[in-house]
Amino acid sequence: MSQKMKQRSYEVVVVGGGAAGISAAISAAKNGANTLLIEAGPMIGGELISGLPVDGAVNARGEWVVGGVLKEILEELKRLGGYIGPVKDWRLIWKVCVDPEIMKIAIYNIARKHGVHLLMYSMVDKVITENNRVTGVLVINKGSHTIVSAKVIIDCSGDGDVASLAGAETMKSNDAGEYQPVSIVFRLMGVDTQKLLQFCVDEPENLAVGESEWMGAELTALECAKKLQEQGQPTAFLRGNGPLIQKGIDDGEMYKTALIGFIPISTDRKEVAVNTTRIANIDATDREALSGAMHELMDQTWTCVEFIKKRIPGFENAYFSGLAHRIGIRETCRIVGDYVLSREDVYKGRKLKDGIGKGCHHIDIHQDGIKQVRIPVENGGSYDMPYSMLLVKGLDNVYIAGRCMSADREAHGSARVMGPCMAQGEAAGLGAAISLELNSPGEIRGIPIDRLREGLLSQGAILDGTH
Ligand SMILES: Cc1cc2nc3c(=O)[nH]c(=O)nc-3n(C[C@H](O)[C@H](O)[C@H](O)COP(=O)(O)OP(=O)(O)OC[C@H]3O[C@@H](n4cnc5c(N)ncnc54)[C@H](O)[C@@H]3O)c2cc1C
Image (cartoon, rainbow, N blue to C red; front, side, top):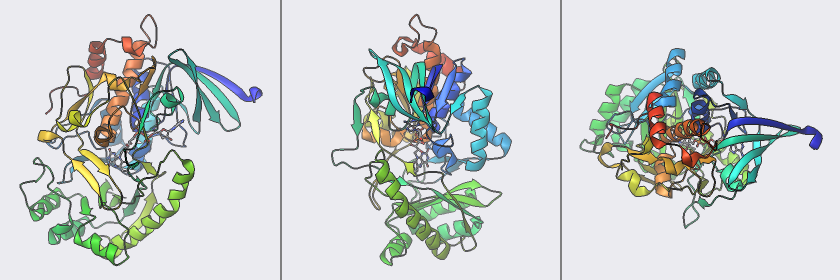
């Protein structure tokens, strides 16, 4: 093995190339840090390239609350013709809709523009520690291992691999051992948008709508359906306990699900992504369990494709056009940081002088079958995320950002969506770059928060001035 052991050195290493990781790596690199992004899979972008919209970036009132790297990527996407933009679901949220195929290219373009080094197909398996610092990670590549040393490590692995390997305290699941479901997103092309929206107007009792005072709570389901029709985008969330899906379940045509959600992804291709499949209570860090889930997710996908084509107007001539590149994971392990974002922080929309980013998505905890917890942020507003939630308790030079964030389970249910994950990543990336200039480079607790906030604002992040 020693013959095949390589050594590399960077100032900043980001582990995990999902939404949080790409934002962290771009932010560190654009601020001058020699940055490596390590990703276990064959693609970077995570759920940004699966067909899902970016949630938590625009609050229920319609104010943007996340900018910065997200906006930079969206500008590139727009230039390439893959941007649909904010679409109101008339339930709780504005979804920023994107073409996942063009998004793959937009992300690479921006990462390359800022000089992010990439190491893909590579899994971080061990960490090298010295006192309270992680001085490097051991990466398994095909036929070789690489030791990558770094001044600062940003753990965006979703599962908190770096932090937990370094001995950080972790939080998993809830007292009942539940996990939010894993799901696979699929796509349908050739959708007749007008027919779908007319169906919403004809049978509004199937729609999940009007759950926020800022989004139709005063309207009837029919009035919300008419708003969807006026908007003209092929978007609708059909309730798992609405008559159509319930009958499908009773007749054996559908599996139990909280929703069938249609998300516009390409006007040219008349294509939507579909968010519906689910298997709850799997520990997705157990790779045998995760691999085993694939059979059922494939079966659910095909069952749902047939159900949609048979039962939902507008899909009669639609055809299956693709499956996400991986099983989507909502929840595994959370790392305990200096601060643990709380449920109250989120739903009360708390503001902080030292906030480094915002979230606005409702507390959104999918459960088994048709169950789902949805608690909106008060006043249709947003909450601030503090710098201290990025710092891993007990470690001096490791940030956590994204799905493995320091948050209680309810707060995680909100901040796990891509807008706030990207805001966290961006702040960690810039924080890492700033820390390189300290007397003890990489001591991330020592950076001046004012400087971090100024830097974030100057790269377009949104920190103040929203509800
Ligand atoms: C079905 C589903 C629907 C959702 N709907 C929405 C939605 O509509 N809008 C929204 O904004 N959000 C949605 N979310 C939530 C959101 O997509 C995710 O929480 C978010 O993308 C998490 O990003 P992340 O970068 O933290 O983690 P991930 O996307 O999980 O990225 C982590 C990356 O790290 C890599 N990795 C892991 N371990 C290692 C290791 N040891 N070494 C190297 N690499 C490693 C993984 O391969 C992965 O690419 C949904 C999630 C799911 C699953």
